[in-house]
Amino acid sequence: MTDAETTWLSPDTVQLRQPKSSHWEAPFLFLLFGRERALLIDTGATGDEQIFPLRRTVDALIDTWLRRNPAVFTRPYPLVVAHSHAHRDHIAGDALLAGRPGTTVVGTTPAQVIAFFGFRAWPDETVEFDLGRRIIDVIGGPGHEPSAVAYFDRETGILFTGDTVLPGHLYVRDRAQYVATIERLLRFRDTPTAPLRELRGAHVEMSATPGVVYPPGTIDQPDELPLALPPRILDRVRSALDDLHEAPGERVVRKRFVVVNE
Image (cartoon, rainbow, N blue to C red; front, side, top):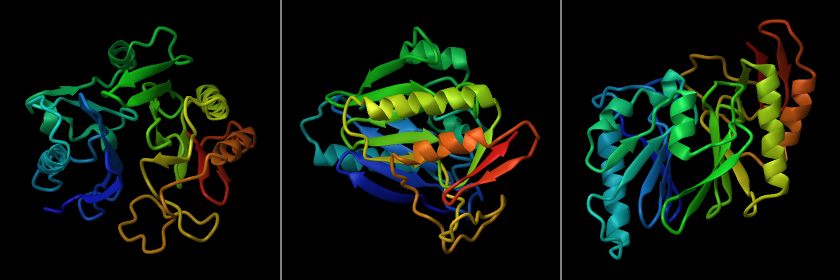
């Protein structure tokens, strides 16, 4: 059993990384606390608590936050488990939390995501999700995967982008939708509900050497880039998409990411 690598990004925000020793994808998960409920974005790449103790980790983090915030009286404190998208390495741990008291696990099809968050004009609409004195803007983000969304946290200024924008491979499965998503995120960045400070995706695959990416399956990444990316990275991704054509497997290499046509 290997514990998650946890980092408190703010008093109310935790970043978790599934260790490489439990799965080479090593996805990042995020736990956001509000006065009425918490939001967990993604559940990792394994459904075996003995390999990656997701349930134990989430319980411990919630207990820690509740001790620090004794004015929150609701018990059990509600937890919503949602996803950046529906690929296996982001939803494999859902079953570990599905039976947890006070927990709602959002479905992973586009229809289930649309219904839960209340989209009326998917994917072009941005909807608000209130955690209790903490608003999360949920932005439709298909292109990498049909049910993908991005989450913007007004409190920290972080845009959580899943596999759509990250320091690594950006796998484009529907180019038209991917372009539309990046343009949607650009519009959001330029007319934000609160200042957008940085982007955090769900993986790190780039080395610190510009343009050099670790290949899939890599277990040891001793010289990887930081996860956080500046808001201007969206302009770089949009430009790279213009250089991506129709050949399957085509790659466009940039300093902090590699766009791959799938």
